[in-house]
Image (tube, rainbow, N blue to C red):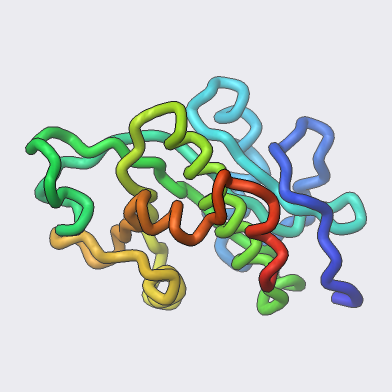
Length: 180
């Protein structure tokens, strides 16, 4: 890990070098190696990557979905009808072992927040939902002000109005200048 200079986050391409990516979690590695591009081509998920020296060193995937009101954090359902709640799902977020601790996860999350805010400007999205894989990940998201679901403490929500408050309007690149 000689340098922490990363290329701007962008959509995964078929030519991206993903084979050497290892975040220490086999399911995350397998997703990137085998399924991310297939899912992207079928429009079932969109994956965004950060590269260094031509190698993918971090990624995240977004999908849209909905949750029943009983599974949503209280602030997410406050003041809305009792119908399924439209959400953006941060389905995956991982950083290569050699780049963990360098702030790349934070940069990837910021990019996901920005893209979610942009999507919410053209379609109904009430919150960003993440399924934390373990207690360490759960705590990391809680530090970002995500709120747990009443039905599963590892399902965490960040309300769209909170995202938009974090992302300077109108959703511009200045958001990345602070600590990315």
